[in-house]
Image 1 (tube, one colour):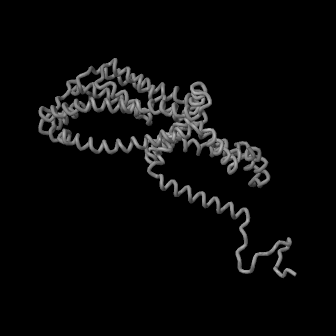
Image 2: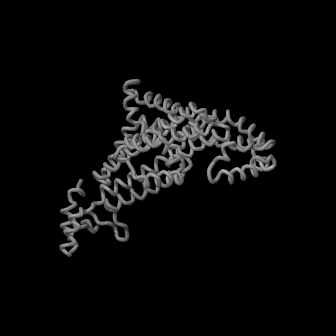
Length: 397
């Protein structure tokens, strides 16, 4: 006869002194903790290259509709070849403005060195128009004569600009360039993988969001995708367009180094009010090199007109209502994203703010003014049943 103790259901009980088997809930908590710890370790190991993965994710999400139209028409059902070719085209498109900017900077570096050398020998003459500036003209002219027109003061001011400093800067720039090229290589490798397996990855992420957060979580994921595309379209496309149109104005007006200023304008246009500083600097440089005051004023006016139209009409239309942010939140997202994540934060910051506003608008119920006034007249706080009846439909979606 078996003398081992048995449980209520007739199964053998655990031996005395042994730990009971964990139930399903405990196993689930252990799996979650293990997955979270493993994810934290993976992020710590790849912390230097998380930016490359973030760039790849932003590019993939923003370019996905274009890729879906591109792949079947070009290479049929070969996802690997389609993703590879699209990645190469994306790399060429993104690298072109960077290479163009580097070429222009290299071309202008010699001219800047020559100008600095001439300024050290002879000083910088005072522009004729400066004395006609109301209120501040005489004060600025006096400062100019003391600090720039005097060759000794100019030599002290521009003494650090020379061949030796340029050589040291070139060495440092070369090391940074190699690192940036390696990060770019990782970015486009990750972009290739995201394009090739994008449907599978998206399905898994949507399934995870639906499982843990329900229908609101799935809608949040969709809104974040829309926000990424809207921010990229409304930031990059509009900034490039504004830079090109304002750059045409530079060429027509005869702004010195017009191509370089056009590239800088497009780059600064991605920041709030950044392009205003760029075309203002272009107008001032035009004045400093003897240009007409009317032409400089026209350059500034043309830049202001393009920016007002682009920022107030074109950009909101491209971003769309789902990703549109109030100016304050957009500014905080962009500046805070840049400070926290670097250049990729230019896109991640507004997307995070858009996701936060989506949660606030859709997950947090708000009483109508009529309901609040009714509750106030009743003199009592609504009970849990009335709250559920008022917001039950919204919470169940």
